[in-house]
Image (cartoon, rainbow, N blue to C red; front, side, top):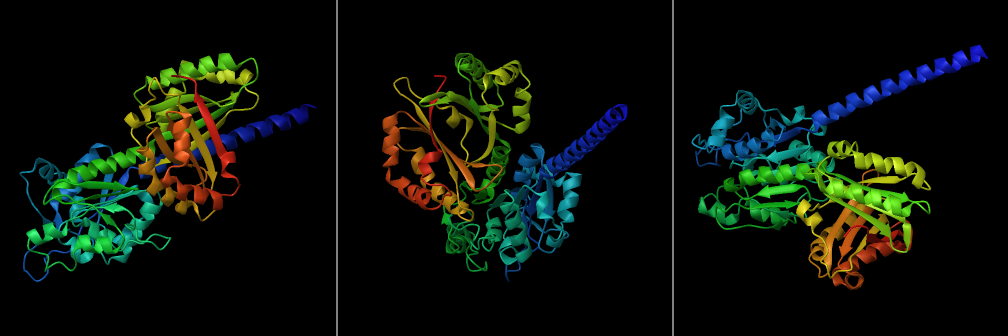
Length: 471
C-alpha cells in the first residue's frame, strides 16, 4: 500500500510539474502575442519623381508623422516598409509643423525611415495594422506591388486594420482577399479626389486617377470639398482624403484597435428553485457595481421570458485585463460563491467579438419610462462557407436596423471560438416595436439567409426573449 501511495504521489508531483511547465509555456506565448500585437506597419513610397515633370516627390511627411504620433503615444511600435527598401524620399518637408519636427528629430524613427525594410523582409503575422502613407510617389509604385498587396491582405484577414491617406489608397486598388474580391469592393472608401488632382494640375501626369480607379474596383467613394478633412471607416478599412486628414486617420485606426481589445461576454445561469430571488439580488449588485466602473462599457442582467430560472449577464469591458480585474472584487466573488449552491448546472460563458461595434454611449442608451423593453438574442449557426455572406447581408441592413423606430440598440457579434457562429443583440422599446421589426423591409434578406443557410432549422429555435432585471 505504501508503494502504491508513493507511486500515486510521484505521479501527482509529475503531473503538477507538467502543468506548471504548460502554464509557463502558455504565459510566455501569451506575452509574445501581446508584444506582437503592439506593432503597426507603415508603407512609404520609394518613387521620387512626378512623372516626366522633373519635380521631386516622395512620401508626404505629415501623412506619416501625424498618424505616427497618435499611435506611438498609445504604445504601438511602428515599422517602415517601402517597395524598394532603404532610404525613403520625402515630400511636404515642413518642420514648422511641430509634429513633423518631432518625428524627424526622433533618432529611432529617423533611422527607420532612412532604412526602410523591403517587402520580402516582412512577416505579416507580426502586425495588427498596416498604414499606407500618401505623397504623389505612391501613384507610381504602390498599386502594382504584388508583395505589398499580399502583406496587406494577410494582415486584414488576420483581423487587422488597413488604413491609407491621400494618395496612399493607391496601395489598396489591387489588394485581393482570399475570396477573390477586391478589399475595397462594397466598402466606403475615401482618397485624394479627382478634383484635388486637377487643382494641383497633375491629373494628366499621374498614371491613373485614384478616385476613379477605386470606384472601378467597387468602392463606394465618399468625399468632401477641396482640402477638407474627411475620414471614412468601414469594416476595418480606414481611409482619409488628403494631408489635412492624416491626424484623424491615426485617431480612427486607434479607435478600431481599441474596439478589437474589448472583452464582450455572455454568461448563462440556470438557477435552482428557491434560490431565484437571492441569486437575482446578487446579480443586480454585480451589474450595479460594474456600471460604476470606468473600464466597463455596458453590463445588463436578464431572465428569459416565461422561464425566470434562466438568467443572463451581458457585459462589455475595454479589455480582457479589466474584466479579469473586476472579477476579483467583492460582488463577483459573492456571485461565484452563491453559484456553487444555487445553480442546477455550471454557468456557461460565451466570449464574442462585436462586428461593427458601437460606442459606450450607444450601449448605455436605455429605455424610456413609458417603454416596456424587450431584448432579443438570436444565436445563428451558419453553414461553413456562408458566414461571410451572412456578415455582408447584415452589413447592409445594420444601419437601417439601428435607425429603425422602436430600436434602442442593435449589435451583431461573432463567437470567438467559431467564426460560423453568431449572436444578435436587439433591444426594442416594446413587443410592438419587435413585431414591426419583423415586417421591416430591410430584414427580408436576413430572413432569407436564416431560412436557407444555417445548420439547424427553424432559425427561431435560437431565439431568446429576455426581460431586464434592472430598470
